[in-house]
Image (cartoon, rainbow, N blue to C red; front, side):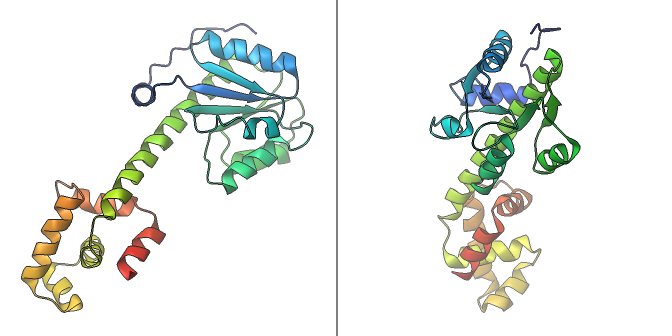
Length: 231
């Protein structure tokens, strides 16, 4: 495989992710053909990324590398669990690692299934080097964004845990667009008490404005918002 033109990972999102993650992006290749794994690894490493090859989905799952920044290149048909089986397994476990399918045995229903499940691309062997590298870059950038969003949500969840039940209730009402007077009536407290709770919520959630506070609240999983308000 020859690279048609250099691919430089200069995306601002990707650069930021690499600064926050001490490890280089890792492209995981799962294919039962050793020669394919070797050729793809050489291509990926030629543009500055790291590559790791596995002969089966089972081999990958015990390797402990899926939490690394990067993406997956999967063959579809392999002995044991297929690439589509792995895609489904990761989705069921909440792992949104971007996936590129690369196969010599693709068909339209299979392609539709993979793309509907969120695959970056479904490519057929032989594939042009740059086409694959472009898909890899898209996958790594998507993973960087997902990891950044997950980090923000984790931070917001931690901050939410510092609120009292009453503060969570006030936060929920503020996010609904209710004014202090309405919130005070609904909760059976004075308007001054609501103002105090709002000030505490802004401080604890590290929000510089009401708009930012609402964005923080809406970034949280719905189930968590309901649980904290009802607790």
